[in-house]
Amino acid sequence: MVWVRPATANDKGEVARVHVRSWQVGYRGLIPNDVLEQMNPEDRAARYTFGEDNATSPLTMVAVDGDVILGFVTFGASRDVDSPNEGEILALYVDPEAWGRGVGRALITSARTYLREMSFVMANLWVLEGNQRSIRFYESDGWSSDGVGRPEVVWGVAVKEVRYRRSLIVSV
Image: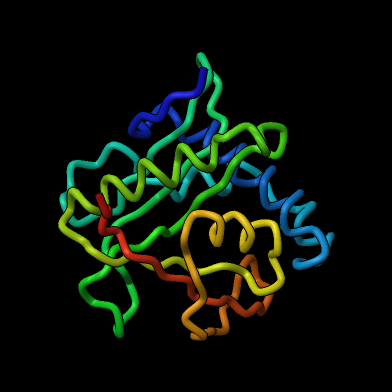
């Protein structure tokens, strides 16, 4: 049984493991293999700030099955200057061994709920161009591209990301 809870400082290592594994599998063909193979969880874990008591910091939730973290989602206020009153999904990653088990759906549903509770009515997220698996997932959850793209440097590699948006208003 998968449940979603806030990430704690003790989760950093496991979240980093999921983060790196999901990149190494999910971005194969989009990021050079040598870059993917050099990624390690220790580098990622040092960047996380889970458990900080700061109302303006992004929030990270983890999906767990027993003691095993299967995925995570990080969200908060949008960083985009043209979307100042929107929420943003900053990251959503699921361990490849848990793909297709509803973990991503549980995480994004939780994030949307929290963003609504934070009084956001719209949200956005950025997807690596060509990441068809993620694009299909987000589109099935009601997200659509608004046609805005941006260059980004990820792990030292120049890539292009595409923005997706959706309403957070729940219709009855």
